[in-house]
Image 1 (cartoon, helix red, strand yellow):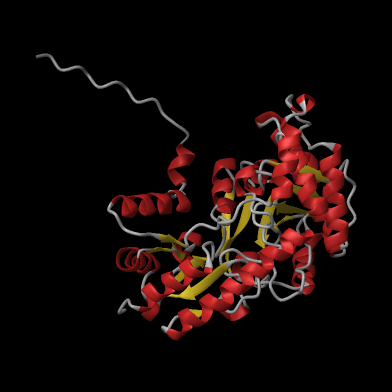
Image 2: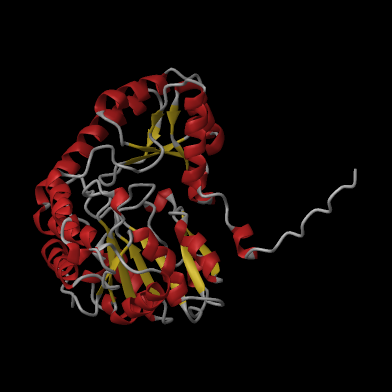
Length: 397
């Protein structure tokens, strides 16, 4: 029998080969494989809140869905009502005054805007400064934009804050078309920052014409009563900065895919130009529901903070009693922990899954600086948390 010659493989973008497997897709596969073996898995891997979206937001969405005028293409930058609600929220919470027409843009979740930003501000030949340790999308977006990535370190001894005198950030003049990502409160560490650090970042950017991009997705997840500052509240920020916000964590709306970017009109315009060619905006009914969250959601945000505080007060002593070293944090719903005995992160995560049925995130997935760390997400109820860490305490490292 005559063999058929194999078909010629058509090429794909070679930049895709530079991307590591997306961390959370790999975690989902591990969880599914363990569950298929009949194991009871307690998932503390992905930062996806476990409770439903508050009822008043769902009710507003239901009303909006019956409004046929919202079934058409949305306005690309967001409806005037949504942008006005964002402006009111930013003024009320952070003391930041924004022009809804020129300084705010709706996003299909903040991840989407972060992913498009290197295309808008850096591009081929540009430079993206990404924190190591950091959300993997910062560096992945740089790869897809054809930009050069420079990883700058976040170290425990400095509270996981940038050191603008480090060699990665101190080398001469900033390259043209450069963007530096920051993220506070920080994922995965839970670290928080101060206005003084933002002032230092603005000074650094001003010396070389670089852009600053602040991922503030966890800004409302503060647990000590001290609201984190917005980068945009600092002098000079509106000349060089864009800030990303999300409704996902604050209002249990991860699946709704809605957030916003705000800041320098020039940066917002550039991001809008990219988005107008690649997407058609946020579904208008979702924007209507988001307006309800932003204008009537203070008690829901308070409830989120109370819930996370209770969970941290339960989880941290349980971990520490069994010998784990937990980085002290008063923000986010994550615990950032040293692996027992300095074990490699991936090996530790495998043992947690195999021996305890607990899915956690290896710190190495957030960069080389995360090696030797594990992230636990407090996204199950207190009973399941207590069970999870009781199982963890029984492992003999």
